[in-house]
Amino acid sequence: MQVCIHRGTNEIGGSCVEVVSGCGKRIILDLGLPLNAESNDKKYLPDISGLDGSDDSLLAVMISHPHLDHFGLLGHIAGNIPVIMGADARRILIKAAPFLRGEWRVPAMGLNFKSEKTFDLGPFRITPYLIDHSAYDAYSILIEADGKRLFYSGDFRMHGRKAKLTQKLMASPPEKIDVLLLEGSTLGRVGYEESFPDEAEIEDTLAAVFEDATGLTLVHTSAQNIDRVVSIFRACKKTGKTLVIDLYTAVVLEATGNKNIPQSDWPEIALYVPEKQRIQIKQNQWFALLKKHLKSRIYIGNLQSIANKSILLFRPLHMQDLENGGLLDDALYIFSQWEGYWEQDSNSYLRDWLNKYTVPKVSIHTSGHASPSDLKRFAVALAPERIVPIHTFRPEKYHDLFDSVEMHYDSEFWKV
Image (cartoon, rainbow, N blue to C red; front, side, top):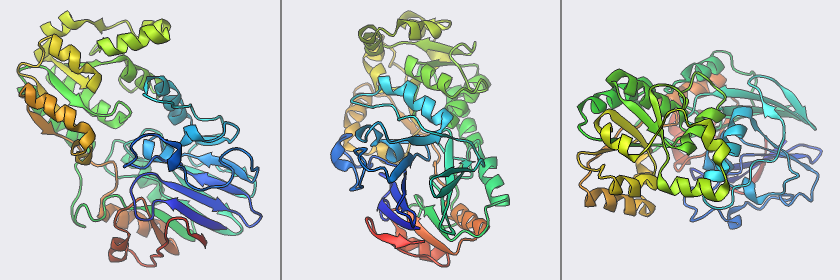
């Protein structure tokens, strides 16, 4: 079995790994858009034979989880290439695609991962493991072929609401792993002894801020970060606040298929459809979709009357409505994403907007990735013969934490 990390040996984002069996059959692990990509352009596709559907040695593309830097280039490959991923993740991407700018073709059909359920794909034997990450329905993947065992960690952590999934894997890991492809997103960013707050701590911090808010509170996070949406909702319940969501968020929450996750028809949740989204609905004739979520719909006048008792799951398309509705007096903006996104030039318009209306910003967030000490614990538990860095800007840091580190470069083929 041979492996080529097409992107990721010294970079976070744009992950893509090609695995080749001794008989020449191939699979691809993730096909992500680089974090620094200016657009979702075909030019970012790695140089892999058969992405046009012309080479039947390419058996499938497997997506570990539904984050853009792991699936974002799927729209540029042939529709006859099977895409294998979690069923919930697939449903989220299908439901979210119409709301996104640009061309976002839904994933081609293929098998759905079921945690710890092994399946065969040509010469490959595949076992996915559901794991804790900020993306919903995320997996690590064990690949066996030619008598070798490769374990792809994907992105994971141990401090989310699904931490028990990672702990379960570590308590009973697959045996005799030859190579562990181990993500290292946090290496070089935080010290070895540093840890991250868990989602329960994020929930408590949010609740304390919500309690003191005197106007409308805007929380800017990804609707697809389901753990965070749950934390926000629970903080709302603790403080007697109403969580206000838009149609996109309602659709994503429904797409999880999990009735224990907040839904648009829950009494503590209100649906507000901003003007830009109403235009989308009219243009795309989404009236049946809207009707499914109308039970708790409110309008701008309602939002004005309950501003100090409401938490708005904010998206930039709300900006004009909030201005026109006079809802920025005493408002508070909470940024609940990686701080690196905030500093990007693409967010300058948002920074200017908050400054214009003197809306204060508070950052409340935790990482979607394992701390260095948790990476060490994970590697010890899986006990691989070799560890290969991936999804990291600092591959040289692996030598400080792990034994038997094997360095490789993008586009280099090497043997397991």
